Image (tube, rainbow, N blue to C red; front, top):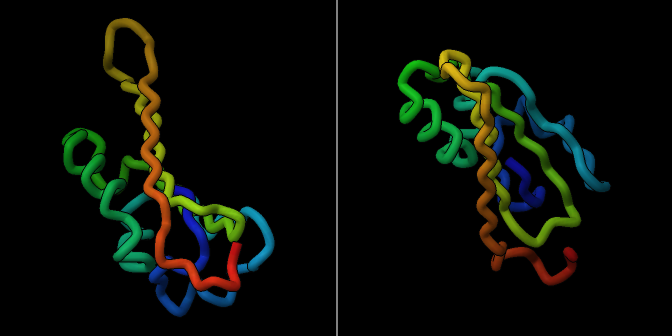
Length: 106
């Protein structure tokens, strides 16, 4: 998931790591560990973990990226099934324009 720094609602443990210059990976790893750190920013990922009932919160690899140049919140899913007889990948992306950025931010 990519988003601007402003709408992020993060645990205080992640705040010192944020840098307000370009793209910064706030978190990368299993979704279960990200949920309590950024509860307002993981809804789409949590739905994917539940919908893919064999994946779950431990099997879904999540990445939260903050970028102060973005004007949208972007959720991207890359699904690669391991038990399908033929290899394939499904890529989906959704963008929602941010309307609540302070005027001083790009």
